[in-house]
Amino acid sequence: MRDALPIFRRSLRESWRATLGWTIGVAAVLLLYLPLFPSIGGNGQMQQIIDSLPPELVGALGYDQIGTGAGYAQGTFYGLIGFLLLTIAATSWGAGAIAGAEESGRLELDLAHGVGRVGYALESAGAILVRLAWLGVFAGVVVAVLNDSAQLDIEPIHILDATVVFVGLTMLAGSAALLVGALSGRRSWGVAAGAGIAVAGYAFNAIANQVTEAEWLRIISPYSWAFHQPPLVEGFNPNGAIALWALSGVLIAGSAWALRQRDVIG
Image (tube, rainbow, N blue to C red):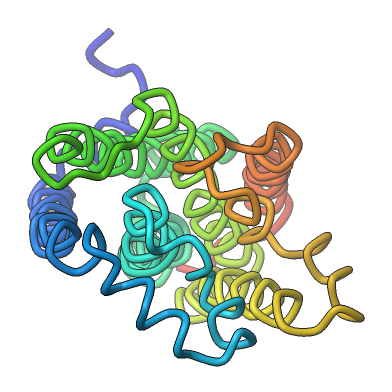
């Protein structure tokens, strides 16, 4: 049993300091923003500010429900700052797992010591998922703890709903980075892929919110799959959640296939 899942265990062991740093970052953002809601949102001040902005801008930013506690937490953390933080983490981990190891020569050494290529890819993906799940669950716990004191009035089950799609959305970016890294062996390409799918999804959603003729972009926007129906307000959209996790699974399987098919550059 000591030799089971060596890449998975090593990834978690070697990244615990970085994971702790991301955890502190998530906590800092939530503790900075959520307690402000009673003073700027609960008295209607936030809604007045939103009402003064152009409707197109409000729609693009997804701030149409920010006057409520659930909408405020959704708009400030899950849909914006938290999304940015976890996407950066996921993309970095995904690009480094295979392509980064290949560039450093570590991948070739691991494979020479009997680690299977498919197992390497799957264990790497598992380690990314565990770290993102930790950050997502931790964020949900902090929101739940602050729910009463910050007067957010969020249904507890909706915090769970938000966690499911939040982790799924960021895992998709990490899976894209993992796949392109496995295909190319270049960490920078993996980073570009993970960041690209996140930015494109956000941009497509923003455009769809502004332009009626462009609403079809939501069909190809992972961000829309997760947040067009705000999970903290209404619960998650099951079809969107399934799409996020299914596509991540396909990309992870593609990573295993890609690594198995090509020569590793030492």
